[in-house]
Amino acid sequence: MPGSRIGRDWADRRQQMVPLPFPEIEVAEGVFAPTQGSYLLWKTLFLTGDGHNLHCLDVGSGCGLLGVQMALNGAASVDALDIQEAAVANTLENAELNGVRAAVSAEVADLNHWRPRRRYDLVVASLYQMPVDPEGEPQRERPPDFWGRDLLDLFLRLLPQLLVDGGRALVLQLSIVGQEQTAALLDELGLEGRIVDFGFFPFGPLFTRNAEQIAIVESLSDAHHIHVGDEDVMIAYALEIRRTSPDWSSQ
Image 1 (cartoon, rainbow, N blue to C red):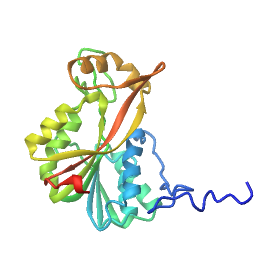
Image 2: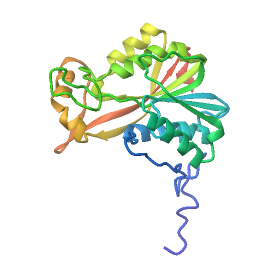
Image 3: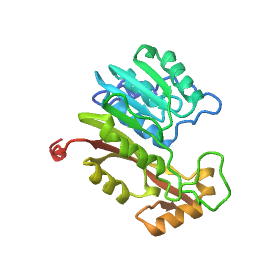
Image 4: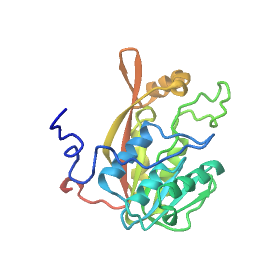
C-alpha cells in the first residue's frame, strides 16, 4: 500500500519487530526441534534482552535456540547441556552460525548424574514434560513418567546449587503436569516463582498418543488443559524462579 509505514513503525520500545530478528537456526537430524514452549521462552529472552553481561546456562539445549539468544543478548558466557551428543554439536554449530561461538560452550550431560561446577546468574530450561502410562507400551523417546514431571522436578531440585544469590531461572511449565507440585517443591527448596508469560500449545501426535494418561493425571491433580472445538490445547507458562524473595509487586 502506498504510504504504508508497516515495517518502519511496527516495533516495541526495545526491539525491531518487522522483520522479526529471529536467529538463524538449523536443526540437525535426530535433535529435538523447538516447540511452542521453546518459542515462548525465546520470546521472553528476546523482548527483555535478558542475559546481558550475565553468566548463563541453557539446560536441555536441543538445537541451541535459547542459548544462542542469550549470547546474542550480550551474555558474558553461555554454558549449554544436553543428553544428546548430536544436540551439543548442533548447539555449537548454531552459535557459530550466529557469530556468538566465542561466548558459548556445550557439553553432554545427563541431569540424573550431572553435578554443577559453578553457579549462574540466569538459567533457562525448556524440558520434556509428558505423562506416560508405566504399564503401557514402551516408548522410545523417554522412560515412563506417570506424572510427566520427572525431568522438571529433577531440574528444580538442582536450582539451589545452580543459582548465585539473586540469580534467576526461566523455565517452561506445562499445564498438563500441574502447578501445585511445582509450588510445593519451590517452597521446600526456599525458592519463589511467578508467571511472566504464557502461550497456547496444541496437542500434537505425541500428546494425543498419551491423552489417556494425561486425563488420569488431570483427574488426580490440578493439571489441566482446555478444549477448543475438537482440539485439545495445553497452556505453556514461562515461569521465573528466584533464590531470593524480592517484592515483585513493585517491578
